[in-house]
Amino acid sequence: MENYLFAPDRIDLPEFTIRSYEPGDGPLMSEALNNSYEHLRPYMYWVKPYQSSEECEQRCRLFRARYLLAEDFVLGIFSPAGDRLLGGTGYHLREGDLSTRNAEIGMWIRADAAGKGLGTKVLVALLHWGFEAWPWLRLSWRCDTTNVASARTAEKAGMQKEGLLRSDFPLADGRRRDTYIFSALREEWLSQHGYPAQR
Image 1 (cartoon, rainbow, N blue to C red):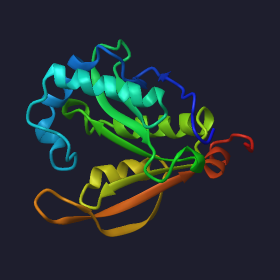
Image 2: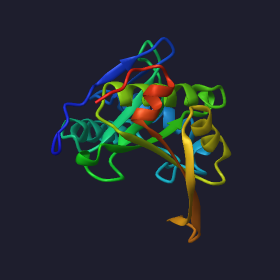
Image 3: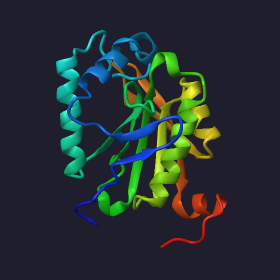
Image 4: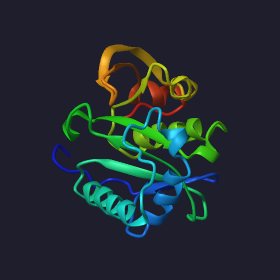
C-alpha cells in the first residue's frame, strides 16, 4: 500500500464515465481544450490557445503511464458513449505520498458543459468512489478565492471549507493568489451518507 496502489480504472454512471486516459484519447482532449480555451484560461494556468491532437495524445499516454506507476491518478470525464471529453479530474498526490492516504481532487469542465451542475455531480461521484473503492481517508479541493463557481461546487458536494491560504500560489503576471481549501474525511462522509463504519 505504501509504495504502490492497484488503482481502480473507471466508474460508469448514467450521465458520464470517469476513467483513466488511454492511448487514442488525444483527439478528444484536443477538441475539448481548444473549444474551451477562453472559459478555462482564468483559472487553469496550464491551458494554451491551441493544443494539437499529437500533443494531447502524448499527454494522455503520460497520464496513463503515471497512473499505472501509481504516481498520479489523472482521470477524464467522458460522455456515456465515450465519444466526447466533458472535462478532466483526478486524485492528485499533493499532500504526501500514498502512505498518507490523502489526495487532492482537481477538475475542469469544458465550456459548453459548464454551469449545468456537471461539476458537482462529478465531485460527488469522486467522493463516493474515492472513499468506497480507493484507500483515501482524506480528500481535498483547492480553488482560487475569486473562482466562485469552484468554491460553490465544493460546498454543494458537501465538502467542508477548512480555511484560506493567503498568497498561496504565484501567477504568471507576478501576482499571488489566495486559495480556499475544502476537505472531506472518509469516516464522516460514509456515516453522513448511510454507510456502516469502515476500516
